[in-house]
Length: 303
Image (tube, rainbow, N blue to C red; front, side):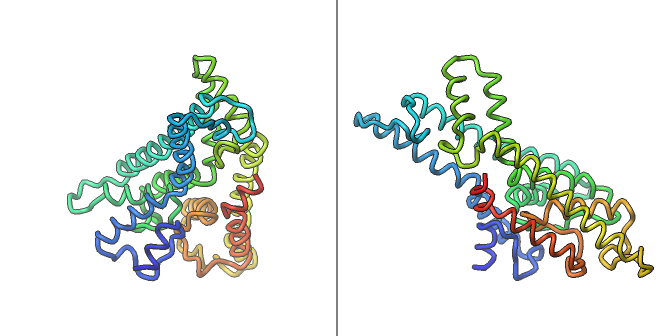
């Protein structure tokens, strides 16, 4: 129980038991731990504390300049507006993305059989994918299942949107707010956010780092696709050794889907539609390298 609780709240996706066979109460508690342990929500705590500090100091006439943009000469109104924009944008992005993912997954997974639950499994899967937790309460649809492609595609989008591509999406949303802003002051504050992003919020990257992330993320995915495709899909048949054991019984479409999904999921999420015990050594090494690169403190430091 302790191991599973730590695994859920820290988004590692590890379980020492058959998680799908656990009682519904365990699933509910695990879901709550994933939600309240969300790194994206945790990153908003300093934003909230700085806003509260501004409110408290405004009552005592203590200067709070620089609480949003450290070391930059800004007004209290600038700082407060910037922090509220971050809080509102990130909060809505976190909530709406999961709700949309849940709705789409529930539609795809819907079945006319009243004895088969789909709403709760869809919600759990959307939350788990968004937080890159790697836990499911029903097996992911794959071989021979017509729902496999749309379900795994939505899961891929949630995995990327909730983790690796979050800084990309956040900067895009802030830029959209700039284009939609009408007041001069609001435009001024948003331009400050875009010019000095890391002084205000750790996950809002500078322009050069955002461009770098935009290049690196698809490059790492494509590199994994290439390595798995060569090592586990092409090498064995090319040497007249038959299909690679991990690909046995899969149609060409299922193989392509599995390779793409595994390449996106492995770095941070831990979902799998393949038996990784049968993974070739080169593919396993490539995945380990990508997992190391994706470690949050390292990527935040580099950016």
